Image 1 (spheres, rainbow, N blue to C red):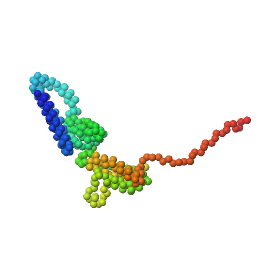
Image 2 (cartoon, rainbow, N blue to C red; image 1 turned 30 degrees about the vertical axis):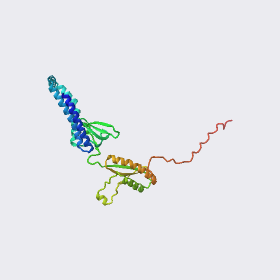
Image 3 (cartoon, one colour; image 1 turned 180 degrees about the horizontal axis):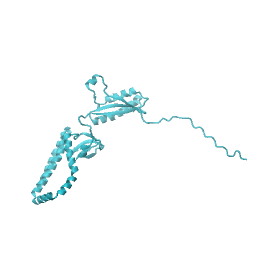
Image 4 (tube, rainbow, N blue to C red; image 1 turned 90 degrees about the vertical axis):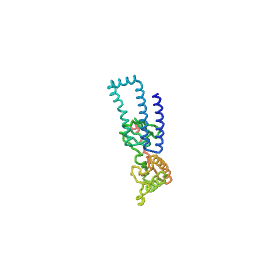
Length: 281
């Protein structure tokens, strides 16, 4: 009876908390991470109470358990060492929830392990990251707590990506700079980062610079400001396509590795070998 009651209670609590977490995720509420973690704590508490009730209801089982606890000091130490990593992950998960370096829905780049993805869940033991390939990477909370994490959604979601293109030295530099600025400013996802004072001073809408005079190319750089990482990445892909088409129409050439073969005069024929029959009698 106790076991059945615990299973029904756990299912009801699990469903209710799952729905609440889903609602908070849709509204991008930061408390979704706390509630998701609390769901696992609540389920663990229900099963622990059920186990305690079963032990208390069976005197023989209670007596055996008390004997094991009284004589199992060595076993408890061994189990304590074995569960050290698991307990460390639980403690790390609580630290993550308290200090909030990231929450559910944030896009992270875990620099120390080279994984990028969206935080999908934070459990008692691990954090689930959903990658762009729709795969799930399971990372222990202890690793996430100690890792160097680049959070694309921390504090503010606006993102600035750098778009670098290389043109040949023979191309019209000023024309290329003008076209690059026009294409970026015309994109619907571009956000104007200028302040009111900068606008009044006539600062350009798009910051475009000559980044480098390389060996075989003039490198131009434009700063792409987007509402979030997804919008900025999509804008960069669109601009690469539109710039290729625009540069082709305007007669500007992208720099790329190629070899010029210069013609030369054909080599002189080798002298004929001497006739060995000469000089014979």
